[in-house]
Length: 465
Ligand code: SAH
Image (cartoon, rainbow, N blue to C red; front, top):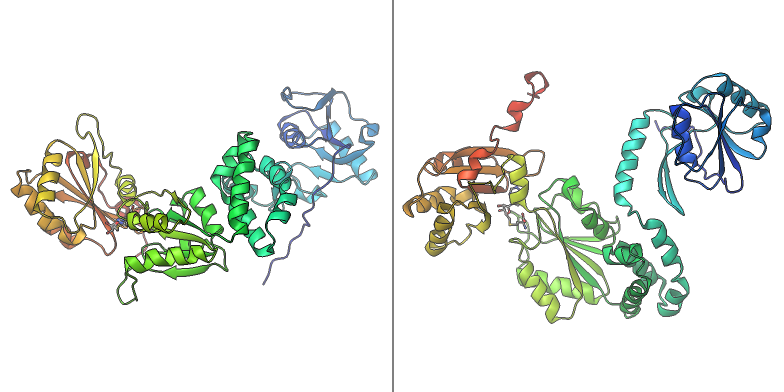
């Protein structure tokens, strides 16, 4: 059954009116903080004031509550129980002024939502007085999504309206222009820094591009697979995409974060699925951009690490397609986090090398061995299936068989698992590994991680059979 709202959210006008808060303690203070965000005349009244209201733009009256205080009041709060709270309650009811009694939902005419304040823009989150902590959690999420300078951006962008109408004639392209402009971290920064002239230049450039119907490609790192390891910028850019061209390794939940009507193309190589050659992917990006589309090329981890971004960038440059790059958390770093391994470690490891075992020849392995001998950690991508061969080669190059090896499968994901052994034991280690992409760490610093399986740390009683 569908739950209906017991409230109707509205935005109440308070400019030029009073907000009266009866109470002198922490409850009154909490409401005063909210009220002070507005330009209402906020009055706090109680015969005993014991919270510290200094620094808030409110009038504090240490006196008994009197009815005349409610003249011109838009709303009344009653808190901190006491004679003044009771008087204010009765008076508000008598004069039919909306009343909020702190922590007594049954006595309230209205609730105070959790507020995200980006004046003139505001977001109010209400749970009808139930589980207010949840409303605050939701607010924290929205806070993180909305830049602090959003209000400024709203105003500034409003000022562009006439020019946009004159420059871009297609409504569809205008919508795209606003979407791109507002999704651009660069524009956000310029406006936030009050660099109005540069912000205008940037907007003009984008306007021109939209007027000519030019597209844009974002190469975006999706991180290791958990949706909350995506950057805020990646999320924003995703929501502006007309087309999302994604690898198979990027989980659906992330691909789904784009607009519902965005086109989605899976181009990764996966068993049993049609796969695209790199050349074809390069051309696809250019073709979409030339159709005036905003393209997000979504790659797992970071796009610049074993992501074949080099070829895509070269092709975009050669075809004069504008692009930018949004970094992501590369899987080796997610693996280091999952296994609690400081891959650089004072007096043990002076660095980390991201390397691929894919197609590694003897010369490459010799080089790795010399790096590992000098105490540098190796973080090997695409090495899971040949971990034993690589280990043998490293031993042949003079590394000791007791050199630590750690493997993290499905790093950064819910089903992450970790394994620890030595170069000499690499073949056995390989036998145990779960399905999924893996990072292989080699080096002395790896032993300082926590290589117990996560499951082992969950109390027995909570484990699901
Ligand atoms: N651009 C990606 C790497 C792509 S190459 C990044 O920055 O992470 C593909 C290889 O990355 C896989 O063979 C595996 O070695 C590694 N990989 C990708 N996702 C992974 C994950 N969630 N856990 C462990 N390794 C992963």
